[in-house]
Length: 251
Image (cartoon, rainbow, N blue to C red; front, side):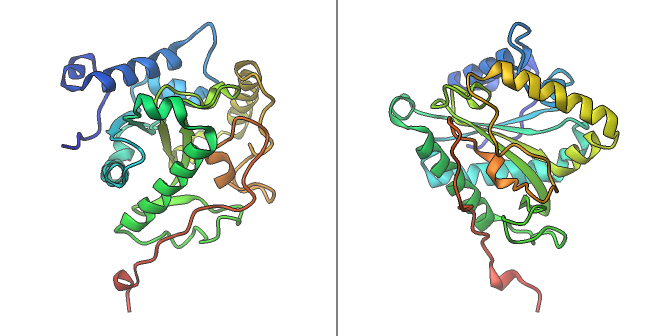
């Protein structure tokens, strides 16, 4: 049975499986760590304001988990504007210990892109007209249910890049409208971004990845930031292939 979107209310935690409670607790520790603060300041604000929403999916290697993800993201897409200006959807996958012990970063990377391709296949809505199809276009963004999203993936295999480490495979999915709202005050946004980069330099034991950039800049590709490897390498070509169901297109 697929649970709906979950708010971080203590009274609701009794409904969760043991691994789900552990995932939420680990996430809470990450978001509230004052000694070693998480770099993404908007994420910590969203957590403190209870704007974030949570979902749980099964083993990330299984196709049924991608279907669970699609249902959760569709629900979130329909309702996200009611959750607050700092909302994101946080997805925890039930990652088996055998997988945690054996999977490397590149294997998680492959899984991540498989999930995005499957999401596109399951999407019942049209791709937004103002977002290009080509991921190598600077204004491309992954879209689902008519909404552009910034995708973030964290895995148990990340060690050097602690900002991308989590005890379970995890996604943080942020609507583009949230990022636009955040950037409305350019001076405020610029100050926050400087603090984020400083925190990032302190948080990770490796230099800031060269692919981290700003949306819309000519030398920026959003897809490269979705999954950062644990070193300074990156894929040369985007693995995303937009699924087009021609039977759903208007004549």
